[in-house]
Each structure stands twice: as C-alpha cells, then as structure tokens.
Image (cartoon, rainbow, N blue to C red; front, side, top):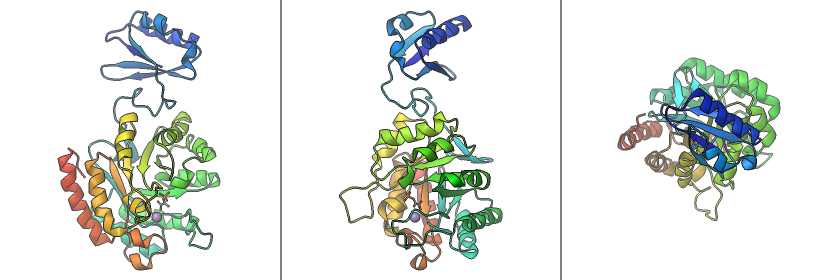
Length: 338
Ligand code: PEP
Ligand code: MN
C-alpha cells in the first residue's frame, strides 16, 4: 500500500498518517520527492482500513500495491536512481555507462592491454571474471584471487572501476574491499544467501537476470539486496533461455522497458552473453540503447581466437572503438550521451 500526501500537508497530518499505518501493522517508508511525499507500507497491509486512511487530513490518495517488491518499486521512488560505482562514475542518468573487458582475466598483460584500449575508446568500467561459473568442471574456472589482483593492477593503470562476478558467500569480505562493482551472475540470481549477504555490503551490485527467471522473480532478487540495506543495485539483461538454438541464448529487450517501468534502478544490457556471437554484438548494443537501457556490458578480447572463455562472442578493441562511435549516434537520438 502507498499513501500519497497532499501538497502542503502539515507535520501533524504526516505523523497521524504514519501512526494509522503503523497501527495497521506495517513499517512505514517515507519517500520525499520535490513535489510529492509518499508513504510506503512494508509488510502485510491488510490490517489497514483504506477508507479510514483515505479520510485522514493531509492524505491525497491511498493505493493498494499488489507488487510484492517495495524498495525496488518505482511507485515508492518515482525518480530514476543513479548508482555511483566509483567517485564521479555513475550508472543511470543521462550518460550511458559502457562496461567492457574480457570474459575472464587471463594474465596481467592481457587484462592491462584490454583495459587500456577500452579506456581509450571511452569505456566507463572494466569487466573481467576471476571466478567463473562454467557448465563443465573441466573448463577454465578462472584465476581466482590472483585474477582479482590483476584486475586491481589494471584499475591502477587506467583508473577504470572494476566489475567482476562473485560466486561464493565466502568471498564477500574480500570483494567488498577490492572490487568496485560486484556482479551476481545469471546462475546465482536466486542464490538467496548470497543476495542477503550482499544486502549488507557497501558496494554496488550488478544483478543479472536468471536464465529462466521472470521479471518479477528478478525484481524480488533485487528486493533481497535492497531490503538488507544496500540500495545500489544495477539490473543487467543478459542471456534468456528460449527454444532458439541459432543464438547461444536470447536477448529479451522488452525486459529493459519492463524493468525501467516497474523499478527506479538502472538497467544495463549484455549483448555478448545473450547472442553468444561477436558479429551480433554491435547491432544488439545499438538496439539496446534505442530501447532505453542505461548502459552496456560487452565482452572485449584482444585475441578472441585464443581466449580461455567466450572468445566466440568477444569483439576486438578495434570493433569496440567502432561500437562506441555508433552507440554515441544512437544515444543522441534517445537524448542520452556516452
Ligand atoms: C559473465 O559475465 O562472464 C558471465 C558468466 O555471466 P552470466 O551470468 O551472464 O553467464
Ligand atoms: Mn563470459
């Protein structure tokens, strides 16, 4: 349930409305916008008498909110959230964020060279996996902690914030100290222990959509993080599993519009994992920008043919430069910049 206060309500009217809600058995969240103040009920609002609530002085309107996600919900927070990922570096707002880098960190030379090249082309942040969720236990599993060290070196060399995936709750303390954005991969979107623990971390979380998760399930996963106190969540539309086998997965661009409508949190798109094909990445990126995303996360490798992971979907630094120019052109059409 949300209660919208009338413009110019008094302090006493606000207190009375809050008390009426609390008496109904809920916790009240107050959202003060420039023009509108909204009271959100957290918990079961069935004990609140809507008609009585509606008749209170200072109350403009009372609405039942059927969605189970509250803190993530745009109804409580009409303005777009801009997530700061490093001092002065943001995701959300007018400027698109473009996160680029290899699927996996492979060596110091590899990650630093790619970091320098994507930075030169205007990337916002560097991606690179050190702990990899691989289908096969025999496939490259990532460099682990030494990979994180190399990401930090690349950050030092370029100033780019680093984005990398977490797999285990055991690593949360280390990630919170050493990483700028903690990625929750598609396979862990409903790892509720991980989500709860990340709710207590003071670092932004890039939350990918699970391969077969509904929009509501995805929003509820973000709700776990926000309800724990961490309000810096960035959604990432990545691979969806469908009947199609021509592409590795499917890019569901309608999810960008759905999540932007339902939530105030920023949404970025990963065309690399969605298509699994390097030649599709540029066009899908442009489509994602046209659809209104807040940024992209793109796999870039300086030697895709010999990449230890996801080479077939990685574009080269030269292709990334071209992509950035075109992204800038489409961005201008939708009133964004890069
Ligand atoms: C990745 O970003 O490299 C990755 C494995 O992500 P996803 O969870 O989308 O598969
Ligand atoms: Mn990958």
